[in-house]
Amino acid sequence: MDQERTEIAVRQGQARIPDPEDGALLLLNSLQRVELTDTGLSEIGVGGQRNILRNGNLSQSLDPHWTIYTLAKERPDQSDGEAIRPDDRAVVIFDRSGTGHIELGITQRLNQDVRGAQSLYVTALLKVDNQSVPVCGANGTECPIMLRVTYLDTLGGLHEWLQGFYYLSGPYLDVCSISICESQPQHIQIPQSAWFAYTSPDLIELFMERNLEPATIVSVDVYASGHTFTSEVDDVALLLED
Image 1 (cartoon, rainbow, N blue to C red):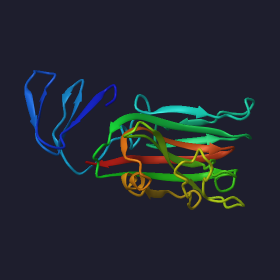
Image 2: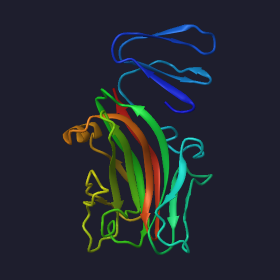
Image 3: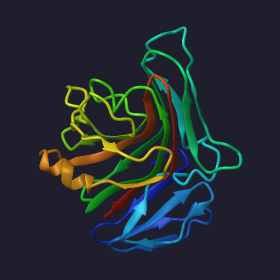
């Protein structure tokens, strides 16, 4: 659920949903779903994968579904860089020239219930044109493009899944093994200035392997981390199957 829509899904049994326009009841059966918005009810969907991100293809302006943010800027005298969606292209570009660490990205709040979900995949088109820090830095936290899924388990614990991408080789390991990288991802080297189509492993399966039963997907972030970087993202999706 978010401020503009509520998704109602029936896993077993039936549910009667009132249409906000005329009060008429809509009957949903097992494995059916519908979205409730300020304009009324959507068409009924049945099972299968669906993208639970809003404006994941970036065909519209970022606001209101995506929020640009910066974090952990090391040197106040250096540039913040910029995350922009050009008017003539359905992409987001992360661009920064400077020294000292910064995280620059876009985030979408979801608060999506995933209890009982069969699978969950992240897909995205990614490109890195420039990076000054080799690999993903000494600690594996400074990739020029990164994906992050934040979720709550059924006991209320907050967790993160991360995946980074880079092209520039160097002396550092391609893993993030420090404590803040709970999932300890192995980052992926991709060709410079070429689009790379990424599909994650099944995140539900990964979480369960760590004895973490996911309850709620809190948010999804796409970001760049490091000193100087230029990277792009297009067509990001979070595919949920009930």
